[in-house]
Image (cartoon, rainbow, N blue to C red; front, side, top):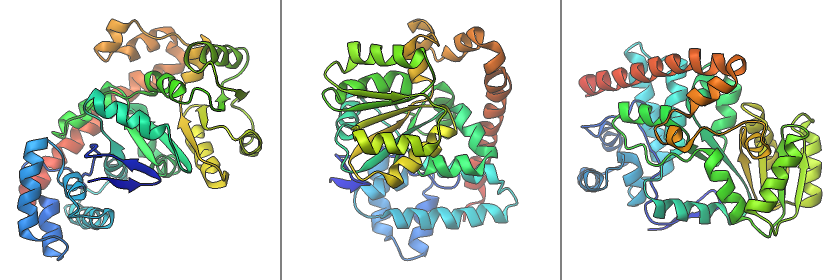
Length: 343
């Protein structure tokens, strides 16, 4: 079954995460809530469970893929579950935000699905925002409501980094492929080769160097526009409206790029993909170096980055990583508690 989500055709059963307030692993708490509310039949619960076990997907995502549930049904169940968890006295604000964001993350499990994803992203039918969620993003949205709203407003969020894989594993959810922006965005540049591309972010000379690398190695047939990442939002709106790039890469860092992306989507009137790219332009321009491939393959690129920029990244990694793991363990613990107390 194919469905259309936010202007992009979604082929087959691309695994989009649909989680309860605290994802359950052994019993369909979401299903029971929907049955009690008259939104799902017991027979369809059994069909979802059977498919879920076969495909190793979450209850809500299977229900939507099979056509038994709508997005509204899932949101309704999430609301009920939040109220139930609140009654247990454990409804911290950051838990609600984490669960909402996890519900939005789209997981991709095979390279064939990744190719489908790139194809979908390469043909937007309206302004479409792509963002990435890593451990730093999860820590940031836990304390910033503005950033949380900006990230949740993105049309698609992908899992970025080993920390997020660990979180999903704690919750007994297959994490899928690591689709970090540093590796995926060059593939998107190639996907948009021959169409106008905008790079907004960082500063000279890294912006110019990054544009040269993009034009020589990834999209040589494209026409580029660029601007540093320290202007008012109105400047980027004006540039985009004048040149109408099919791909806009924002290399401004969190949370500014997500806020700029939201403004661009609201104001632009032509189809384009807007990507929240973090340090991608700095990587392309040589300001920031990538870790060796063997270190990236074991999920330890953050160690390399900390070693190269210790003062700037100390708080993000030395303080942030233990904080993220502590929150992840608490979420997993509350998940188990919910399973024990679920009616």
